[in-house]
Length: 113
Length: 115
Image 1: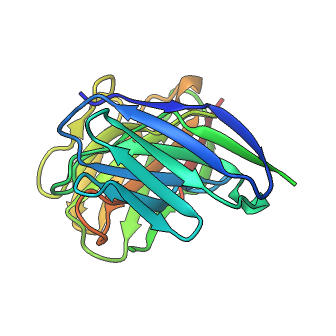
Image 2 (image 1 turned 135 degrees about the vertical axis):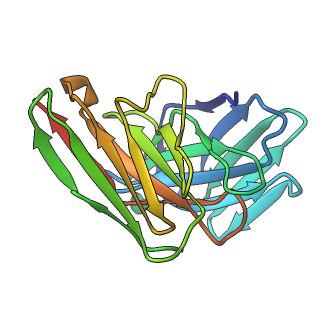
């Protein structure tokens, strides 16, 4: 089955700086890579996703890059703000139907004002 | 995205008892998923619930412990049976979204504490 590794487990950055979280996956059949943000006591929220036919996707301050050859993908947050503080999870899954996702272990991001 | 609700939002239960968690969606969805999130941990898939067929369980999870019902395309239940303190966790349902294949959206979760 799929195995997703996520690094770092914790990350602290100064407000206004950039944050990068990296994930690797094992199953070459995976073609869908979402990122979720989970604030304390709340449900995971989908913030951005990328599919295997795209190398990079951007949404305002958030971007995701994918390297299918190396089987890794990354989340980039620019101009970080205090409200970006949360736990971020990457996931990987097939790009068809509604199939299961395998989640990474999570990164606790803290933005230092 | 679909509006997903779960009941109860939290509960405190005695060991040896069972709790049934409900997940309701405001639109018809093919697949519903049940996850467990232990304190400070990631999301672990328990099972996939298909309407009209038996749920598909992941390794380490069995039907006798986590029976699932999926009576229609908008509703599912997960029962945590014969609970022990190790079952204390957040249980979340998720459904496929309309952003495209593979997308999942989560319910608010049920925080379970077993004494």
